[in-house]
Length: 182
Ligand SMILES: Cc1cc2nc3c(=O)[nH]c(=O)nc-3n(C[C@H](O)[C@H](O)[C@H](O)COP(=O)(O)O)c2cc1C
Image (tube, rainbow, N blue to C red; front, top):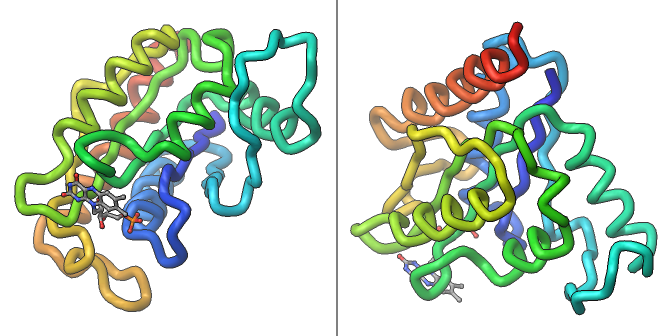
């Protein structure tokens, strides 16, 4: 099983990316044969302009679409920007037709600087993934005051957070396996 993570932050040293690393390590430990993190910072995706599938954008979008198509399960992670997911992540998802996510298990993670956490972002992502016909895990992780949750080398500092992230990674593999009938 291949698990792909899309990190919606374009910031170097992103806390969302650090959390994704823990989730992917747990997915691997739970039996995923391959895990991969896609950083929008590195993909160089153009803005979606609504052109039909037959009119290609170029190799960056083709490569992005191929990676999503090849994944069996997907982690979608975003910082909360003004009460929602980042524009960069929404644009990346807009570049995918529903067929790329259809029927796949998705796990959600969001980070925020505020103490209230990122529930709005998680709700918006769940709504978008439903439109894309994916199965979204009921369990999800919101990380409030995210800058203090990780140390300089990406280590998790907050008590209990490692367990939350590991649960997301292992549940994603478990339920993706059930969905595939294995
Ligand atoms: C444009 C912008 C808007 C933001 N809006 C919110 C917000 O609405 N609520 C919040 O708690 N944090 C907000 N933040 C803070 C980020 O969500 C927070 O720093 C997050 O952990 C960054 O994730 P990253 O380290 O993965 O980039 C905002 C940050 C930026 C740059």
